[in-house]
Image (tube, rainbow, N blue to C red):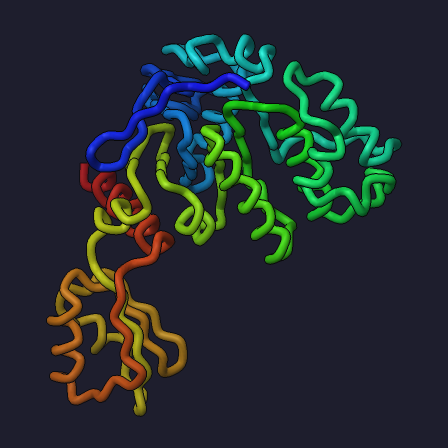
Length: 317
């Protein structure tokens, strides 16, 4: 297995020879610019979540990284090579949403093909076990559930000692236990020095799993840092409480430092830039908030806040 020297900066960031490097990369589809002057570097041993609204450029960026498409401008390198060269040398494994699986074969037969083709293949029984496929290895692929198909795709992506694993919505269709097992395997991959890059709509997974979160918007990096840094950048806190008596939403919208307000029955959910002042004003309205909770923003709320702020800034230009 190829190893790469890795060091850490004072803030805990990994350094060393880049695993992936995007340098001023752009990709257009007709009049649509999917990737716009993108600069991005990934380092060994990172677990990186790629987030963004639909149309943010996530899938296009992954296609460029995997050599499925060529950039219109700029340069993409993987381990200092072109994506095609890195893949041919068995250094990259990918699990993509697009593309079907061969149907008229057994799971074991399909995984064996992947192992036979990989320059640094693992034993097939090890690959089946890691993907939790041993019990269904002799089942026909066209008889699998959606979650089982995802596990087969995972096995194909990890059939050998890849140094970079790219995952596009990897746990779609998996139940909770399967997701936990999947990410347990991924943690072991990064402990061995491999880099994992995954795009997901499950923001709670990004919060729990990734040590780095990259938010794309309109083909550019909007935010890049740990989940904690992304949340801190969004600012504000989340306030939740119940009311004994109904009140009009208009009155609550006059609360100070309010960023967002949501009412569901008598449950009120607020995002505030100054939680102390907002709660004080709630009491000032003569209300008595029950089951009051004040907490920092979750990654989902932070993601929405950062994206909304970018939208507002663009509209003001």
